[in-house]
Amino acid sequence: MKRCLPPLSLALIAVLMTLASLLATPALAQTQTDEVSGVRNFPKAALRGLLVVRAPPDISLNGKADRLSPGARIRNINNNYVLSGALLGQELLVNYTRDSAGLVYEVWVLTAEEAKEKRAGLSTRNFSFSFEGEAAPQDDGKTPYNQLPRYKQ
Image 1: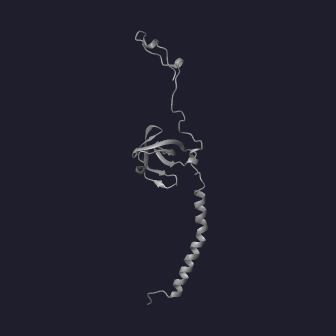
Image 2 (image 1 turned 90 degrees about the vertical axis):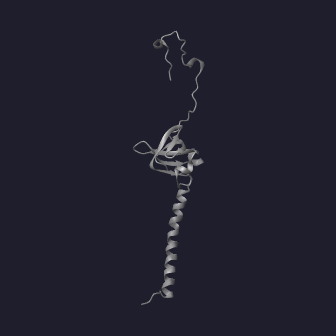
Image 3 (image 1 turned 45 degrees about the vertical axis):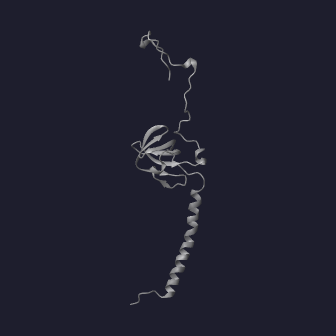
């Protein structure tokens, strides 16, 4: 009963392993260049938003309270998964999708190039302006409530 392999079979194994690694290298190199092309492909249903993680799973999305779903996946700009606790208090521009219950399920933190793309979801109007002629009617205390002019919103 021999317990050790002869030196010739060890050399053969080393050559086969080297050959296998050389054959696998072009496939690995191609997948890396595909990911680093600059802009990731997001689902068509993904929306744009401004995300702030408050106390996981509670978040603020576009200034409104929201919630991450159980098992939510957050990807950073390098497309690596990130835990929500690592993003506490940071205001991030993201693309996101919701699950069937309406909770935020997938989140992608955007790079500058990805942020330039137009996407539905983030309100571009942050302020509401009113002019003198459009001011809300004031109650003078004398006019009955049902006779006050209606303010259009």
